[in-house]
Length: 182
Image 1 (spheres, rainbow, N blue to C red):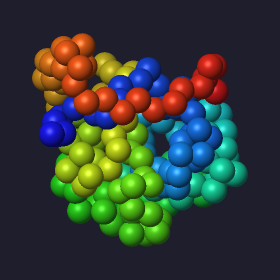
Image 2 (image 1 turned 90 degrees about the horizontal axis):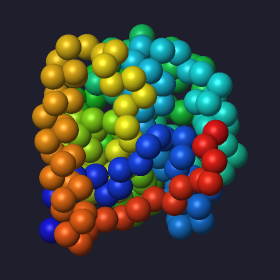
Image 3 (image 1 turned 30 degrees about the horizontal axis):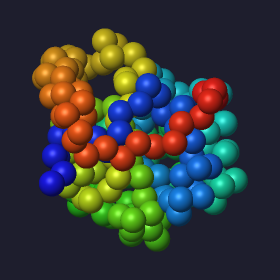
Image 4 (image 1 turned 90 degrees about the vertical axis):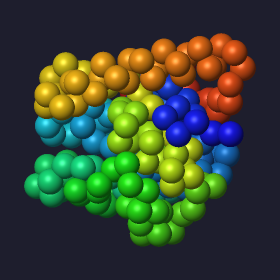
């Protein structure tokens, strides 16, 4: 039984995920959270993010940014990268916009992966939608809105449970990782 608050994998950064290896496994769609997953909270796309999206586009991925943020924030980031669409004010963790993102990309739960930095919005929503979920450590965890900082304390408790669950042989679907990050 899948535990809704536990990611399928937990890695150091979006930029260590080997998306080429995932493409070889049949993945065709990626749904990303933006803030603290791809760049620090509120920051524009940086060189790493731009290079990642170019690589994903070259690999043939369909990409959707799924954010609870307002449109100007998400659109600005999306305009700086290649090959992505976006859904703003997504209402995460409700699974409806995860499903909508897959419909727009022409993908499904078997060939789509989600990458985000928060358990109670990103990971829970992806799990409820049936999408393979990867949690990344937030880029700058203490430079966020206060409600997110407060949730980080609760996440720490859930992540402790996740680590114990994993050590006891709990279900885990590791993503391939690069030898060196972008």
